[in-house]
Amino acid sequence: MKPDLFQAPDYYLLDDLLTEEHKLVRDAARAWVKREVSPIIEDYAQRAEFPKQIIKGLGEIGGFGPYIPEEYGGAGLDQISYGLIMQEIERGDSGVRSTSSVQSSLVMYPIWKFGTEEQRMKYLPKLATGEFMGCFGLTEPDYGSNPSGLVTNFKDMGDHYLLNGAKMWISNAPFADIAVVWAKNEEGRIHGLIVERGMEGFSTPETHNKWSLRASATGELIFDNVKVPKENLLPGKSGLGAPMMCLDSARYGIAWGAIGAAMDCYDTALRYAKERVQFDKPIAATQLQQKKLAEMITEITKAQLLTWRLGVLRNEGKATTAQISMAKRNNVDMAINIAREARQMLGGMGITGEYSIMRHSMNLESVITYEGTHDIHLLITGADITGMPAFK
Image 1 (cartoon, rainbow, N blue to C red):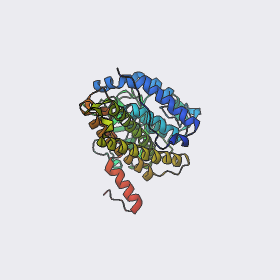
Image 2: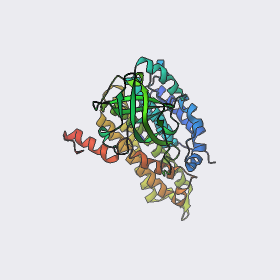
Image 3: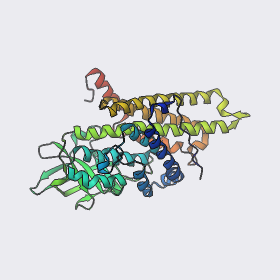
Image 4: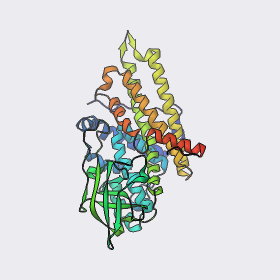
């Protein structure tokens, strides 16, 4: 088992832009990843299994709803702290970060923003510690980039709702205790419902044979005449705008997380290039390898600045959906390109589990697609700057 020697690049001294609290939060998450994730993650990825024993630790470092107010079990941190935690967790593994950001932005966030006080007190403290785990049901077999067409529906049966339909590509589904599910009522209006494991007719079959996010549990949500208590409806907001607000928060976390994956690939490639000798000198002394490394650190630095500024805007309540889309698209694309270049620098060693690069590269193939594909985010920016949506 190789030691985790990661050293974070900070070429433009961005630490000077962070508060002491930001750095303490980040460093705690970084130390936890080095101690609890790095030593085991390759083995779990090879076995395609999520390491459930890390859930408690994720809660302790603020990995679940760090911006949720303390009265509901959260840490009451700001958006930059949230981003830094996501960066450090994804530096360890994108699948682990998926588990964390789904819990934070897609489960806790809608309960906090759209739920009743009773729902907040019932669910949020247990979600914050990981005692409860959650998932988010929006994507369906026939509706991914076009979620407005979803067909999962519920009917008012007087003393309860009757829920029918199916969701797929759902992170955390196989072990989730609750699901925040988006479904249409009889008038076709989209609402959020909290569905609990154990409700009759609710099942969560696991998705197998993935080549990406192998250390993350993915599954389906099946609803066959599920009786959902009326008090489980999220009353604060309806319509597609409600789940889109959740996705804004999650995409923001992804923008930070992708930097972590890129930083890990860059750091691994830099260290390897200094140690690997060919033609009587380290490959780091050759022009082509220096070109690759210089381009990597340049793109990482640009992404760091972009995302820090986005965090400031989020803290001020000014960040737009389109701005978040730009950061998600740019940073994941940046990370996947760095992973590919870093893999080439390691030659044959780059495909082995002795190094993290190939795992990051495979994971990022999912990250570049989920929560808005690479192309959809481009069109969101295009629509924003032209005023002319090109989705149809």
